[in-house]
Image (cartoon, rainbow, N blue to C red; front, side):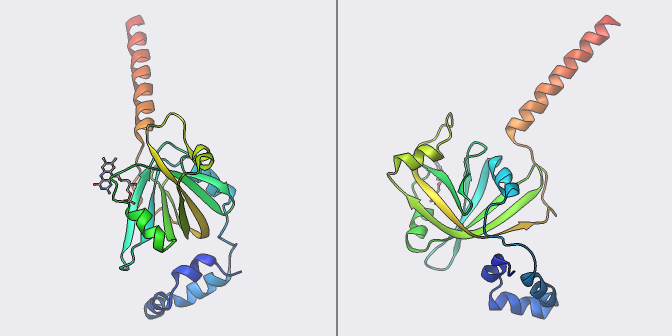
Length: 198
Ligand SMILES: Cc1cc2nc3c(=O)[nH]c(=O)nc-3n(C[C@H](O)[C@H](O)[C@H](O)COP(=O)(O)O)c2cc1C
């Protein structure tokens, strides 16, 4: 079974670069092997559920790529079905670069990075934005998170590919650091109490 991400990412120029540098044969075999990679697996669903941010890439009409970071509470990127992800798009700096790009080219890219567990996932697909659909917004909203929601963005998955963890620095979220500091304080108190007793 052909791997879908290679059909998108391995353009003739990419294949020529692989050929020139000696990796084409390996990747030609890779294209023929392995499972389908265009639907959400249980591993991907779990990975997405704990993400508190991701990078969304779109294409400008002048050919430049454009990447914007989106942050929120863990789970704000939602799996709507096996081929569709969605998130509530917050009001920002009102440049509307992503929305403008998507209005004329729906090709998009998600770069999902979990620094804590050194895992990253690339997803190619098509993105659309939906304005004024209160039911959809309600479905994507995370209660308790302070942000003005302007629209929904839906991402239709065409292909995904896990990357190896190499060179990913380990980073902890503020929430994780807070939990660790609270635990340290607790243990220090316990130690102080024990020392007083002895
Ligand atoms: C007051 C405010 C100022 C912001 N300034 C910037 C900025 O200078 N650069 C940036 O990349 N994002 C900035 N952001 C975040 C973006 O506005 C936000 O991610 C938005 O979705 C960007 O969409 P766009 O990049 O598609 O235009 C800002 C957000 C707010 C609320």
